[in-house]
Image (cartoon, rainbow, N blue to C red; front, side, top):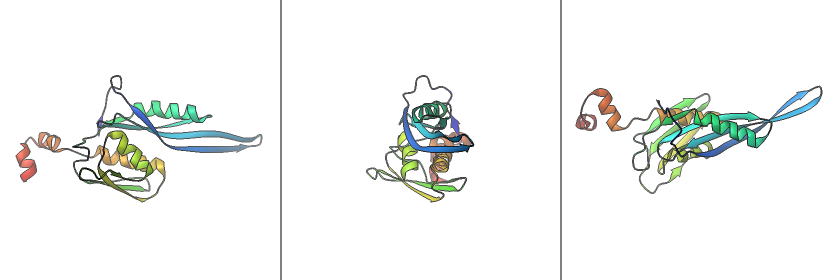
Length: 168
């Protein structure tokens, strides 16, 4: 994965994926706390996710946003779509993303949609299999996006020209 070092000059937008109320029962009664999973991205190839836990929803979202800014990756986006299809798994969640032609839109479910739109992908087909847990779906989508490689990167890593990459 291509980790992004600095976040100072990036204009990141945050999206709330899920908020979960957690109850801890003690002999004194019930204690409520909240966990929020947040995705941040600049809609130009950079995305990250974070989990925040706090006694209030707004504090949990703020903590999740700060955690997401420390966890950014760079994703190759070509003309609003991805360079190739990718399958990834995290925990019980398995995701499949595939490039789509211009005008298709983001055909994806809630947790995957937030990640794909935050990274700036406008045309993609996506399917999730297995668990629908938003935490694992977000993580599996980030893993899939992190494994994507564009033709220039492949050519550079192999030490060959672009013609060799495209023509075999």
